[in-house]
Image 1 (cartoon, rainbow, N blue to C red):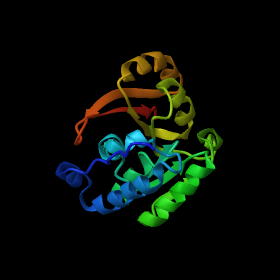
Image 2 (cartoon, helix red, strand yellow):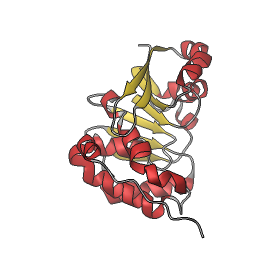
Image 3 (cartoon, rainbow, N blue to C red):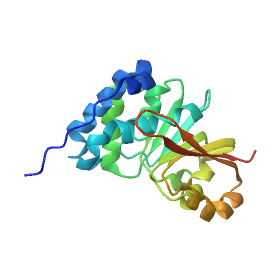
Image 4 (tube, one colour):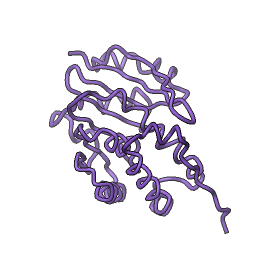
Length: 211
């Protein structure tokens, strides 16, 4: 019998971060607690840091989103950061791109449960949208190293649009290895941003597609 793991409880700072959207985020969190492990979306040892490591981390991209337009979240998986960002920015149109059917089924359930009418689900690989559609901003979290990520996201970004990627501690190494790829793909003005959010700072790489 596996040991029972407790789930972290949202702090007052987290409640303030999500503001009027806290209820939707709390509902999403409960869905993940109830079904996330069973569906293979989140490991059991991630549940004790569900709020701090996943939900709050996802919210860190919100200040980098445009005032209006379209956002594509590549490899949405359990819904990080796409579902969180869509709940917090109901004024933007989100496209959650996910190739795995079981994850798409989960995202369909979440979108319906949270009443997110600003979300479209795209059951496909990002590469399948190349030369077909483009977006003002493309986001990604824990999808691939920066060089690989750039290759399959750059074609999805409109000229003058941005890639907003949540990254970890190896970000500087990733950027060094990716610098020639970024240049070739016309991704410029790369910045590494440490965002102070409750529980732990988030590292976000922002780069623009040359207009």
